[in-house]
Image (cartoon, rainbow, N blue to C red; front, side):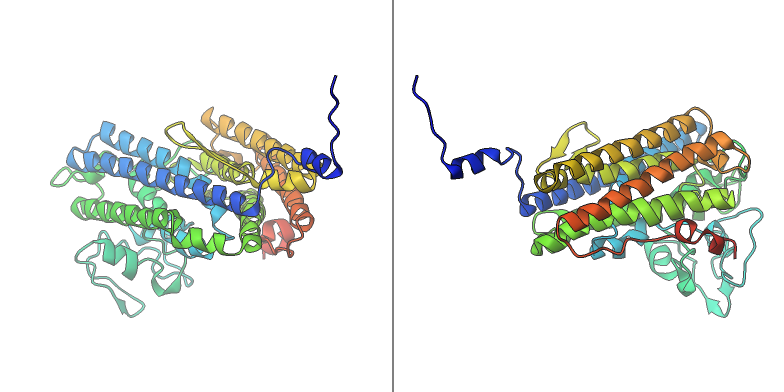
Length: 417
């Protein structure tokens, strides 16, 4: 039998994993997943727009329910893109147009138990009911409700971030109305008759409410079209992340760590639990917060593993950050994947409990030990995986990253001051 002798160089090549990935390939996969995620967000928003058109054309219990279902479906892909925020300035500068929260909903429409404050005199402006309001010496011509009015004139008026007039949550409020149930069961209960023009209109100003909803949907679709273009071939966001490979890898890790720690574990979860405050819910009108939490966690896992399942069931995948880490430190890669699995297990348990009847606002109630455990298991998973993300940064020889923080995690006493 003829024997084959391998040279030293051949032995070295044989030891290289078949999945060896370059940084450039990893960044290409990252950009491809971004493009697919925003494209899915756009197509589901367009489906939502069709449902909104049907509601406006024929307001009924059925068309309102269908519009709400379409809103929930549209949130699934969008929340998986939030991992792109913190490491990409183009996304972070844009994101507030579509997903800003919390919002003082009285800016938009009628509310109960809401008053203007020293911090926000516009909190009960109710632009739908007031075509020519004046607040704090600021005169607003709201005689015509269109994209220009809500997108440029009243959104974040007077520099106040909670004056959110556009995006997913403005549409959510218009479809559900206020959730007045506190930490008890139940979401918003806006009647379909709020969209019936004429003498059967409830809530008043149904024609202007319809105009507002149409304008908000026009803006949302235009904004998503813009972000799809940014991540397409030759797009500004794709080019920016590909320009410097180390900076691009740092952007991936920045998004993973900042979303996991300060944003999701802290501001979106731990803060509300500390305060027992359902107003800190991300999707507070619809009680869809459990799905936002789940999909934020899934988005982090997607970019690490380099794989995203599209709304049509197809998969976008390629060389991943996981591959890159495994080449450097297989044990660290295994640790990261294990921690991501642990977090997603906790997110699944939280989501299943909410689908089973215990919404996130109920989990935030004082004395709800089961709800607190569900929340804390997910929070602890996010915090724990961030520690491994920090180790990956060091292992890849990248400069240390200052991840987003939150007083709710770093200085809880400050939350109550």
